[in-house]
Amino acid sequence: MRILRALKTHGSMSARDLEDKFGGVKGELRLPKQRVRDMVKVGLKNGVLGGGERKPLVVTSLGDDFLRQTPPAEDAMRDQKTPPRKKSQ
Image (cartoon, rainbow, N blue to C red):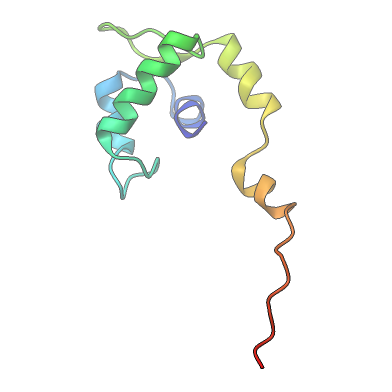
């Protein structure tokens, strides 16, 4: 999801640019660069990303549909209630 959002926000770019600019534990994606590379491969295989093989990565129409249907993780977590804490005695 974060990779799709990054590509929608910043435009198409190569997989190498994506992992260099946004990868790394301290990067915007908060994923190691190898993990970003693996997720790009999964996205290409599943059809949510297009391009690759020396072409810039783009979000496909399937990826757009996926982004529209899935709420952001922060909003999804807001709806969950935390269980009550046990009181110490």
